[in-house]
Amino acid sequence: MTAVATEARTRRMPSRTLLLALVGVALLSFVRIVTDADDLTSAGTFGSAIRGAVPILLAGLGGLYAERCGIVNIGLEGMMILGTWFGAYGAVEWGPWWGVALAVVGGALGGLLHAVATVTFGVDHVISGVAINILGAGVARYLSVVAWVGKGTGGGATQSPKVTGGITDVDLPFAAGGSLFGWDTPDIFGRLASWRWFVVSDIAALLRALTGGISLLSLLAIALVPLSLLFLWRTPLGLRLRSAGENPYAAESLGVDVYRVKYVGTILSGAFAGLGGSFLVLEGAGIYREGQTGGRGFIGMASVIFGNWRPSGVALGAGLFGFADGLRLRPNPEVLVHSLLLFVVVAAALAALWLGARRRVLGAGVLALVAAGFGIWYATSDTIPRQFLSFTPHITTLLVLAFATQRLRPPAFDGLPYRKGEQS
Image (tube, rainbow, N blue to C red):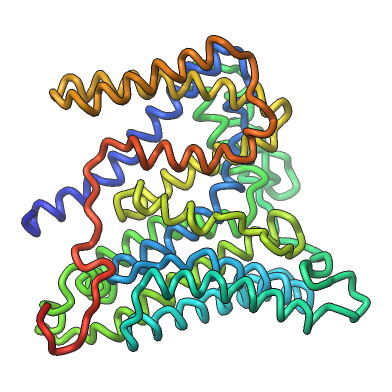
């Protein structure tokens, strides 16, 4: 693919992501009306989805930065674990924003270790990442024992003391009924959402969740998506970072310090993962607990693949996985997740028709079988077994990765060894 074609495709990516998001909301609106499950697209459900998506989004952005500079970061889970512990420690000792800062530092230290192993010593990226996952859990347990066991603070070997305070929530005036100079402004998006119109009310509910009762940490995470796009595609350092992942020897010939660039990308990767860990503590449980990340680092890696190594695609993937996770926290989650079966049926059927029109017979046939299977499941049941709910995000991840029809293109030098002055 030529540089001009690649640049043109990159410019189209946010527009395609927005179109896919709108199509997804339209399908959810259709399912809501057919199944009479109004809570499926309520502002509360979207708010839960955002809270579920943010740590996955941050882990995904971390994976994106690493892979764009040619480093496979399987260790995102371990870096998130470090972020949860350091975030809790900082918040307990000095307050929530200190927790955020220390979480970023803790995750960045995990990224630095991964960079030393893979860039300097040439360790296999997967082996280094798995080691960091194991090490992150072990370090968190050791630090918990040192910091909290026997101190009478309510903490222990597997959890921290309760975090007091949290990150400020905001309500945007007029959009979500926020206060303006002491006056409670109208809740425009909330009013539109209550009318339950097709698509319009569903989009209004989503906008209500994005503008009302949302924490500054969530807004920061969302803002990092366009900022990452600008940084990676519009700044000299971002272009050098991507060149290290596409062709480090060509970048070297142009005077780029590839080692330094890979270090920067991998450390930033860990910092993003650590920030995601702090969200789980400060905006989720309000406490550090062992095993708190729950595989979100791996789901973040899946969002990188689903998003075709683009920030906007990562955001879309994180939103999808977060939505599946957020449904578990709503009233009657068995009914809501059951209604998603119809969503899968319609989405798979439409995708099968699209592939059939492009004469991709095998893919169309597989998706048609998926639509038929889920259609039978939906027609012969009324709810989803409760035991199934905890696995919904992971199953969603597997289905998306298995049946995504987009053409995926990872960075050309992703995961390959590089030695300065040596041509591959």
